[in-house]
Image 1: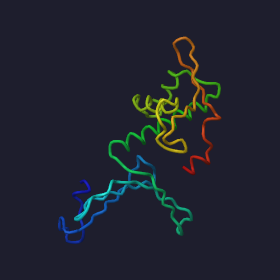
Image 2: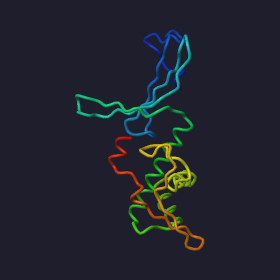
Image 3: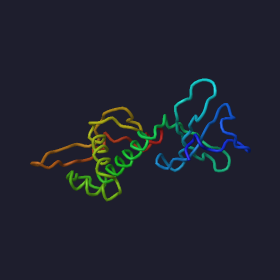
Image 4: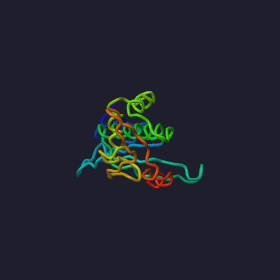
Length: 172
């Protein structure tokens, strides 16, 4: 069922409510991510969907709500997939401090369950050809990997100075 077809109250009279908000979990955005949709508004415009995450600050006492941004069924899934690809690429590059050939990097990232198209998008982000979709570098085109050509093959190395510190990812 979509948000337009959910039950709305004890009697389930369709269209009896003036405003309907629809909340659902979305595991593609994170373990505790929730999408909020403005499903119905009798008077006035509907607002665009947004997502946020809930995190325990003190278990059983306090919860922190972190705004994630606007949500789109099409773009959000792509963004989450690219985020997974970028994380996988970074982990492989970190495990090879001397560098790795691009074809070997591709094979290892594909083994992590990332599709080839998503790997290419993630690689463009890491190489600085596409803007970052999340984190402290969001919206910037910043390369965090250096490229060297060895004949026809590309050799990639993680630029540790360009990669943000772990604390920066938490603040973002």
